[in-house]
Length: 174
Image (cartoon, rainbow, N blue to C red):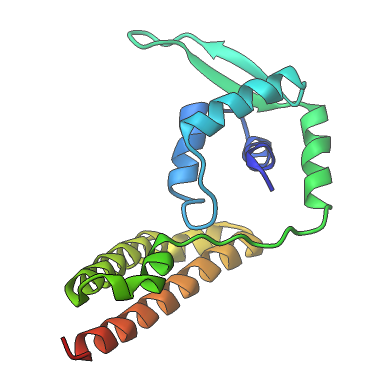
């Protein structure tokens, strides 16, 4: 999976601007895929050159023109090739886990701060994902619903684990 595959999938639902795509990356995909403007726009440029998408410049009053992208027939074929390819192994990176691994080199209070901030972040993520879930679940496909449930359950488990870890760290002798 790469940004091209994800963008093609988004465009299958309908034309979008780069800004609209970034909003989807920051909301819907935030738990399992990340892409910045620095990734999105070069990918869009390459995809347009490769004939996978088209770009239409839309004139806006009082604002700069907006580029709206749409998938081509060739882009649909490329997306379907991705959908029928083998699922790639998941890759996982965690700054928190790396710091925890080396946590013996900092004071207990520093580690406690990591846990507290991470719990707060994950609880906010969980709240965002679960907010409006019932409405979302009724309107979307079963696979999208399962995707959201996977994210919520993963976050709930992470929160539970971090709270347990925080209790253990706090219980340690200084």
